[in-house]
Structures are given as C-alpha cells and as structure tokens.
Image 1 (cartoon, helix red, strand yellow):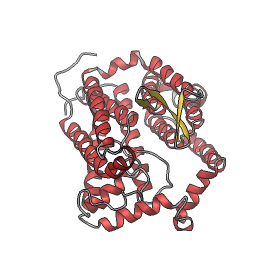
Image 2 (cartoon, rainbow, N blue to C red):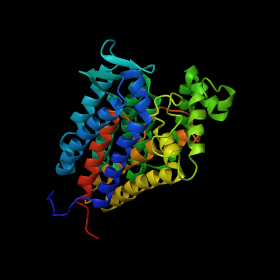
Image 3 (cartoon, helix red, strand yellow):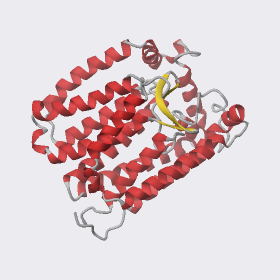
Length: 367
C-alpha cells in the first residue's frame, strides 16, 4: 500500500489527549488518601499513572508512524504470543493473585495483564482473517465455527483466572467485528441463546457472582457486603449535583469507595465535578467514537475498516459497562474506564490501540 500525505485526525487526537490528562489529574485526586495510607505518599498512584501514560504515549506515537497494514504480517505471531501469556499466567508461581484473580505476571516492580494483550491481539487477528476470507463469514461451518473456536478458547483461558469482565469485553468486541463483516443474523440468534445460557451457568458457578447480581437488584439488602460498592458509588454521584463539590473535595474517596482510582473513578469525577464534568467526559468519549467510526467508513481497505471497528468497539463496550456499573445500570464487573482509570496494561494497551486507529485515520480517503 502506498502512503499518502494525510495527517492523523486532529480531533480524535485531541479527545484522546484530553481524556488522558483528565485521567492523570483525577487518579491523583481519587487516590491521594489511599496513597498516603498505604505508601506514605499521596502521589504514589499519580506518579505511576504518569509513568504508564508516558509508556502508552510512546507506544501510541510509534503506532501512529507504523503503517497499520503492516500488522497483517504479524497477526498470527501476535495471537500465539497472547495465548502463550494466557497459559503462562495460570502457572503457580508465575501468575500473581490480586483480588482473587490470578491475572498478572510480575515484571520487576511492575506487572502485566495478559488478558489485556489478548483483547488487542484478537482484534488484529479477526480484522486480518475477515478481510482475507470475507466470503466465508456467512457460512457457519467454514467461517464462523473456526473463529468461534479461537475466540472461546481465549475466553476459557481468561475465565480460568477468573476475569469475567475482560473476557466479556473481548467476546463482545469480537462479535461486533463479525457482525460488521457480514455474519448472518440467524447465527447470532443461536449464539445469543447459547451465550445467555452459558452466562447464567458462569454466574451460577461462582457464589460471588450471584451476590453481585442480587446486590444489583437490591444493594441495600447487603449494604456492608455485596451491595457496598454500588451504594458508595451512588452516594458519591448524588451529592455532586450540577457543578460538583470541587476538585479534591470528594468524601467517598476517603476509604468508602474501594480503590476509587480504578473501577469507580467516574464516581469521583461526578462527585467533584458534578453532572457537568460527567457529561463532558462522556462527550469526549463520544467524540472518539464518532471520529473512530468516520475513520472506519473512510479507511482505504477492508482490513483498516475492521481494525478501526474493533478498536472503537472495544472502547465503546468498556465505557458503556464501566459507567453503567458506576451509575447502577449493570452489576459490578471490575472493568476499568479507558484512559481515566489507574492501570498499567489496560492504559498502555488502549493507547497503543488508539495509536493504530490514528494511523488508519491518516490514510483515510479524502472527502
């Protein structure tokens, strides 16, 4: 493919950078008390977040300069490495256990989360396979079945950790790509039925997941147990009102919201910045999705279109679930808010993925 002289989508880049800056600031505000209590350093989490953001920005800049079509030469290798990491993390002594899940591999003072790598690895693989074999995707045996085998093998390995939230994001993103590529609606109907039954089985197999479902319907039934997180989240959002309590003035971050810098950072944003801040953040995500979909529609080839759809689909699913959990629309899942929540692998890999999206935007057809 011949490169053209277009530049990356400036609006898309601005929205990404704006959310990243807001994220670093709000990680400090949300985590200062926890950092002081646990590490005697109120800037502990903020400094690490800036380090992760810096690494992610380097990755994003590299991906902006790396022709997205060149990934087609490495998709199989990337997918195999991601599978190897998912197996490696399950080995006792290699995988680190946090919060009841063996989902991390320690690397020096830091750790990586293989399931985050798999989300991007699966998007790259599916975009390549579907672009190469588009005519097969409407046939279940020769098209859908092999892909479903790969998707659900990865899902099974993620569930062995267990990490239902990340696994669900990967599967949902994969299905969005299959749908856009032309898979039959009838196949999705059957898969939806089987998937719903399997989802119920996964919930029933783990008592803590049942507790999360019951607390979703009535969190005040167990206010100090399974309903604690959502109650504290709502207590944060409610007092925020229209304009918020002011930066740094959140009350719920003082040991009420567990780890407020991660899954529930949107609650702190709403408490300190009010409805206005919450809407502003959502609008920035909407801008990314709008420009991402525009990039997908104007991409010069099918691989670029599907790759952009996968990246935007992954972002959309995570934002929808995270904010839905925070405001009480979904049960607690443990999914971070992209670009805002504290995290290493999740933040870095999301910035790398968005760097690929920006590179596609630089090669879109001129309208």
